[in-house]
Picture 1 (cartoon, rainbow, N blue to C red):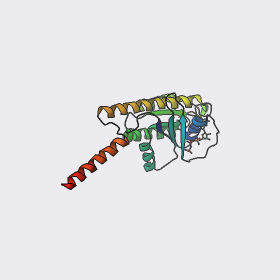
Picture 2 (cartoon, rainbow, N blue to C red; picture 1 turned 45 degrees about the vertical axis):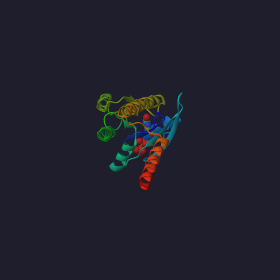
Picture 3 (cartoon, rainbow, N blue to C red; picture 1 turned 120 degrees about the vertical axis):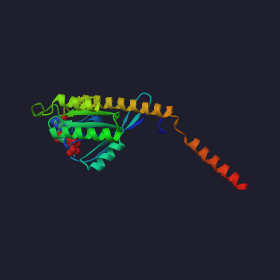
Picture 4 (cartoon, rainbow, N blue to C red; picture 1 turned 135 degrees about the horizontal axis):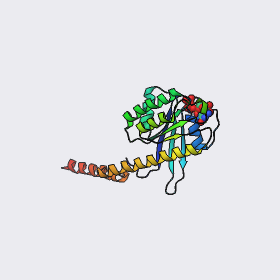
Length: 208
Ligand SMILES: Nc1nc2c(ncn2[C@@H]2O[C@H](COP(=O)(O)OP(=O)(O)OP(=O)(O)O)[C@@H](O)[C@H]2O)c(=O)[nH]1
């Protein structure tokens, strides 16, 4: 890892069909809810957060329904994950449980994740209980946000803030771990000097 500051992160928004992945992403970036989105379309967004010390550049991948192979590729690419299910759709909750197993296998248990129980405004259509969601969050060891992307920006913003906190914590931890193992990030100049030294050494030995 050569990056010394937490100034960028790759986030993947995952979930079953129609759970509100695009609505969530667009709400976070624009604060708006349009209500009618291109269905099953994968989109990559870049979004800059202004922070006091340094801006943070986010790449946010709003996924579509993909083959398992593509889904695994996205998971390997991401640093942090937003798992969305709809409280009105049991299948989407099962999909979140399935994704949990894949994430734990591919990325390990310390991966930054937030779990989103979306469409809480649809009270009479609710079929996934808060307890079901809480149990999944416990298995993932991650915070859960019960919200309605349709109704407001606040929950979305809080969930993303929490994910950023986890991402930063993970970044610092990895940096500390690599410093302790003596694996210092090398500058380009350092590497060039090393190559030059080797070359000079070789040409000296060629002359004898
Ligand atoms: N009632 C309600 N509808 C929502 C909410 N969030 C999203 N929707 C609606 O759910 C539908 C699907 O939303 P999308 O954001 O397209 O969902 P998606 O997960 O990106 O869908 P795919 O990419 O097709 O899998 C749209 O009609 C949204 O308006 C919500 O919080 N409440």
